[in-house]
Image (cartoon, rainbow, N blue to C red; front, side, top):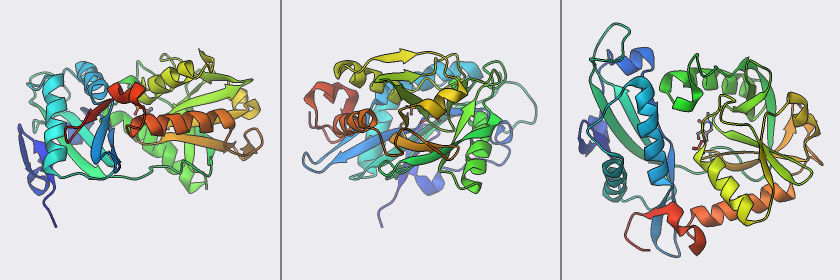
Length: 307
Ligand SMILES: Cc1ncc(COP(=O)(O)O)c(C=O)c1O
């Protein structure tokens, strides 16, 4: 079996050597921020395309400011490292890339400055995270999304994913595929690890960035596709009851991709089948992400050098 490599402490090393101490600050206190990036293998073109690489690295560099993380690696350098790592791992399948910027110092105590900051990046083969065909059964979680002035979900901070894990675990334990979370003001926020779109009367509706959501890169891509396809979209607060009267709903995110929802709290969404607007957008998203559409080729970074 070929060696899997990771970027760790400034170098690409065998992944088995990329290990942190048990007293690492980020491990104790959740003081890290991360990204999830996908690369799609296109067998026809014999190419691996990293989707929105620069956008993810730019977002992580902004989010690092929340934790006062300063890395020597620039956004450009982080993008180069991802490409080098994928080449070294000879990735020729759909692949997930996980960059992680964190407080690495072995330190007991609550502070953000005066600690060492580090970057780690690893990759793994990944298919669908949630089913994208049959339609998901979701629930409104009994857990509430943390507020921006509590643990900011915008930051993609490792510590804030405790909330996502609890909500998702509760949903799965109760027989659902995924959880939708409300904010403390009762409006719809997002899925545990994805943004939510609702379709009403032919219009796409999604919660604003002030609804304690992650400012999703896929969400932005969906806006672009919808605009190009002439589908109107609105960004506004969504009431819980709108979930029960929606014609269609779907989750979107790097991991989730675009996954139609067919029931919420055991109530069918629309006619209980994946809706036509969701399916149209899904088809367009997968075609763009895998490099089949010239118009969206600028979303992609080819790993092996094709255009
Ligand atoms: C909480 C949360 N919301 C939304 C998203 C979607 O963000 P993106 O489309 O940038 O992957 C994610 C990650 O995939 C997430 O973890």
